[in-house]
Amino acid sequence: MSVSCFVTSYHIISPCQQTGGPDGDLGSNEIKLGHERTIAIVDGSGVLYDANGIDINELRRLANEKPRQPVSEFDADLISSDVSPNMLLLHSLDCCPLCAQSFDSQC
Image (cartoon, rainbow, N blue to C red; front, top):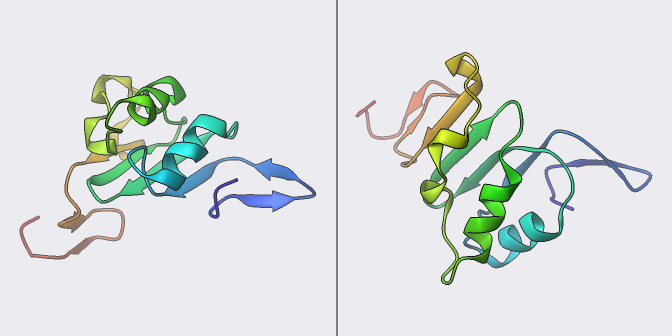
């Protein structure tokens, strides 16, 4: 369903990455209707990443809120407790540790 997923003969190969969070029209519909394991979501509020898969129930809670909520409102306690390089919750896009690039030299 999401454009970042690889699709082969109508079968989505996991894991998926999604642009557009639970607060947007497309992102919320992807979360509500999708069945693939999502490991990364980027929206205007930040980046959410969990190599083990982002908790779908928490994503659906955000997508169903009135008004819908961005990934910055994701309950960080639900991110996997494995070794930290596999998990990431950024509330600001000022710094991109995945690409070791600082957008405003504040990292």
